[in-house]
Amino acid sequence: MNIAYICTEKLPSPAIKGGAIQLMIDGIAPFISQTNKLTIFSITDPLLPVRECRNRIEYIRFPKETYEHDVAAELAKHSFDVIHVFNRPAHIAKYKEAAKQSSFVLSLHNDMFSPLKLCKEKAEQALQSSTLITAVSEYIKQTVIRRYHVPEQKIRVAYSGVDLEKYVPIWTEEGERIRRQLRQTFGIDDQKVIVFIGRLSKTKGPHLLIQCMPDLLLRHPDARLVIVGGKWFSENTWDDYVSMLHRLSAPLKNHIIFTNYIPSEQIPRMFLIGDVFVCSSQWHEPLARVHYEAMAAGIPIITTNRGGNPEIIRHLENGYVINHYHDATAFSKAIDYMFTHPEKAQEMARIGREEVERQFQFRHVAQRFAAIYEEAFTNHCLH
Image (cartoon, rainbow, N blue to C red; front, top):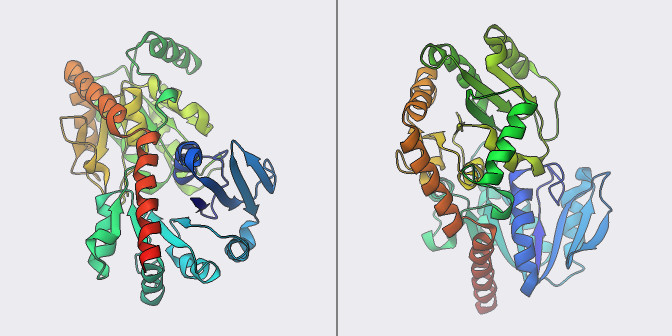
């Protein structure tokens, strides 16, 4: 088949500046392009040419300011069997108008049908223009079904994944070597390390991890919190929230370490610095991809019962799920559990790694989407 991917206008593809959607596209595109012709549309970037063919994949890039219009004009010049629109239901009717002969798959990575983002008229246009819809979690699927009369079979849950070759389990010899090297880089010896990886925003909740440290240090005086990330993808600028994090951490001195932005290709290694990984999401997280990454690295996971997170992290089976997600003491209690039950923590981590090996690799994600494309194309032809 002749397939087109339309990225969001936020970040370029390939994922030279990170981004969950762009990283997923990087992961599945090599598999999809093995048996299909694949074109990927994304925004321009100074580090990338406007057009190029790379590993059998054609990339076409347009300026952010005119992206939607330019993509629609380009679609009219081609004959794609399936056009996969990532996370932009508001644009799909316009793309459908430009490529009436194509079947459309809309994938949802956030609650994009929220009335705050999409009016009812636009939402209904998007639903009508989509042959099939995918969601990164059952939670996101239900956000659409609750608001609109959409048949269950039109929306499929397509869980994401990782490139397992990039993730070395912490219990291997190489994993131990990387761990020692990273700890030496950041001045950490044999202390107990909590690692947070993500954007520094209130919705991601790193402030709660800092707030829980005084209580945690009473029981684990050698604990260290390593906060990996910047304000935004590829940015280390400070806003009011980032400034607040640094003020909050100042009394704790060397117990808190900020790494600032780390390039996406180095993230798989960064998990290995920790004894436990914490996803402190405060918002209705669609299903944060850091869960798949931490599972692949073999790190015990603590997460919050928000959005789609508990769909893959099951309490005391392959991780620890916090219900009182807004309470700092709940985080100190969860971290204390992991530190004082190391054998149970390692058992959960190994289960997580096995689950990634079995169903959350990018080749599995590509298989899921390939089946959806076949169905979308067939359904479109029948109608």
